[in-house]
Image (cartoon, rainbow over all chains, first blue to last red; front, side, top):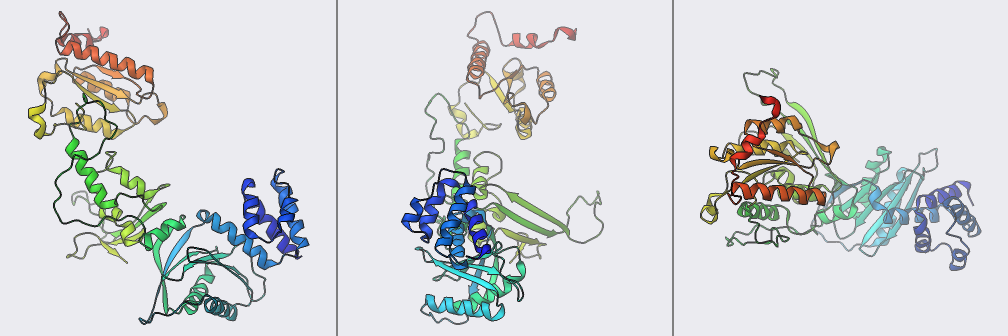
Length: 346
Length: 131
């Protein structure tokens, strides 16, 4: 077995937490039941990985099998990577039947015709997701297995989720191969990025609970704003205000769990508005400023701001529009007279 | 009655009994809390400041998270001639003791203790080295 393959398998196994190694090796299916029985999973990971490499040598593992193991690891620990969302556009309205074999052939063909040294691995999952792993090389060097790109494509949708490797120069080639293989004619990057792949899918597939605006006047309900208030001697003076905030929050965010995003970034290119007497900036050019909100769970924390009394309800639409507009990167320019808010550019 | 700020919503005016004691709660971890109390104080009738107002500073257990200078709060107490209590709501013992103190003050402010009136608080506020 190739030394580089052995080393790659060893390092991949080392990444896995010890109590998960057995399950992942079983999912991989490359080592037989009997071989797995011989492994001692209670020793230190260094030794476990050495034993696994030994067994792989017995089975003559190649780079294909090593790449398959890597895809499985990254599918389970997908939230360790940063994912970007791309949207593809069709030229016509024809609905073509999606053939997975055709897709794989065209994808491989396109990449290999441009770049000889690539490792391409596919894996399909039950939720119609096709995972593609691409390790990139150059005309003179073998592919670097430690910096692959991952693509997740749901064939029924025009969306592709890409976790690019550090080598950004291969991105155009990857995008080209995708549109050729899937019979689209254009692809563009959306301004939506997160670690949580499932949340990105929830946002673009509209799977989170949205609140649709109701135009009928509902009678004000004494809703369950403070469910734990069992003592009737305590009187909440601001009950109607609390209910108003709760209602506005429900309208803005819906009642279900929010998709998980880690940050929202607003790039301001607006003029600095100060008291004319202060005369802070006499140069009439845009004041460039970057505002970044970060949180382990940004949308849930935004949702809890008004009920916690930390912000006024309703929240700024720039914050609440994040799931509806499917973006968390914004560019805000000066309003051009007719528009009510700062102009949000695509 | 619990409110987030003053003035109280007018729609409940007819349901409200006589107010005997106003306790302004200031969270020492939040500058906004102090600001909110300062703005609300402007809505209190002057007669309340004769022993019917008290400041309760919470969260003093967490020394690292203090955002408000205790001097500022003490000064507030002096300006409005009202006592300032410090407590930590997360500790059950302190919570219970503070509640007992407040109930005692309320009994006096409501006139339930014969011989002691709310005005006594004002005189107890004067520090011995003031004279």
